[in-house]
Length: 441
Length: 178
Image 1 (cartoon, rainbow over the protein chains, first blue to last red):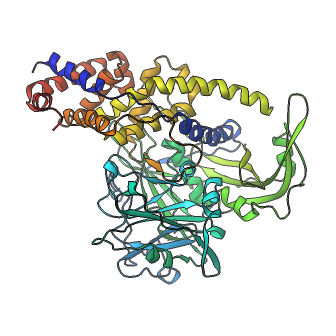
Image 2: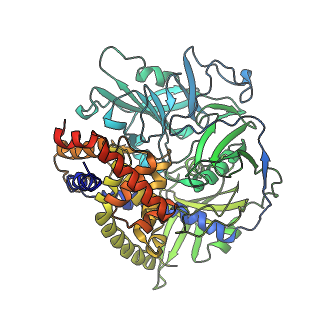
Image 3: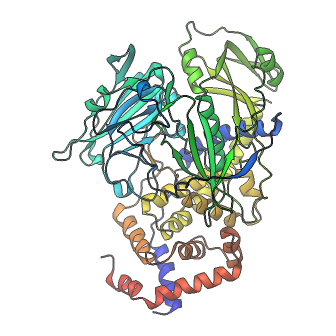
């Protein structure tokens, strides 16, 4: 075969693809949600007040873990040998052969062989644990070639989509005083012998999706095994936040750092050069997302970047003072295009204050209470919506890192990192939990 | 700011994007397979790419070479091993928009292409994907990959040479879909 023939054959192969259409309506739905989040971050950038100098470049002495190349996150040892992360006395022990994984303060035990899996071009060998992105709640990851393996999905139960799922569930047993709900197992033919069943701890804001195999032979873990293992972590202990995959690139890293700090964790960001990969791509999180960690301990994020070997970026070196808390006065000033009046919605609000705070995804988010927000139309009529107004402040490494598409001359090279405090408030519909308006400043 | 003005802008952009998504969908899926993904993976990659395009639509429309820019997004998404692939199990709003053609046919085409590029390096697959499936000229491939145009040419030549000289492609072509 000649080069020309090879080229022709490649073209033919492409033409053999039958015509299909993109899932446009799904794209628009997810895209609007992602755009809304990004715009909030962007507004943050535009007016971020405090900036501090980043002390970068300190060489990391210890070996830095290599790129995991799309494979699963490294799994923390399950035998309690992680003194750096967890004081043994603080943490309920995992049963033999199991590890604890969860979100916030709610954990369950899964087999130690179940790795954290980020769906990508590659596949898990056995069972796995995954985190559902906010924009894709109610989804399960699709394994290559629809391979069916047992899995546990962990999701925020307070998004409108999750709430819809939770609303239709039946009451289950109470765990340490927290109510649980669960649905019935679904074993559709399309799952090839697997079933999916969900349970949630609504007051703690966590929704679990268990997939198990109902065929004989390899049934090592059942829905009941996982559900019955659910527990609430004691004070002073939490779980490592995960990253929402819909916030890609360095944006995702900056947001993740903010969430980790909000959860009371220290963060070390290690930059590691990668051939032919844009800077700012998250390579690994150690300890792995969802694993148990003592508040105040350090989580290490390894990202691509730099060219002179691994470097440690210390975003906490000289943190600026935290800005003053946001008040309704601040809200009225910043959101001057909107009007506010005392709450006239249903009492009690169907969407609770606790849920609204959870949506803010910051452990130290605070509520400004129930209000009616008025959107003023062009003809000066006002549309009122009853909302919870919640606020938070968070420190991020770089408020500039928002570009998509990367380098290579098609986008300007990024300006120097600008770490600082972001302040934001968000309004959630007190009836439905729908996001109404958010401002970062 | 008023609700009605915002909506007006959104509708126009959405239409523009929907048209763009339809026009580029198949190219992106093919390119994903040429990069080594399975058909499902490639469709998710195309979806992730278009999602990013939508989010930064103004940048896409401002780019000098729009397809080069979109290719860059595609490659970044492919290299970002954290890319998510999700299948909605719980019907939320609507059923799929269009009935899909015969599954076997789709898989056969993707499988043949994936096997064809199996022996190539990732760098070689990238130039093949952008040349044959996104239809970019060499200069734009260079721009998207962040390499010199000369490197594109040599990489392409080596890739085609490798495909031409091994029996792999001939066997594939003559052996049908087995």
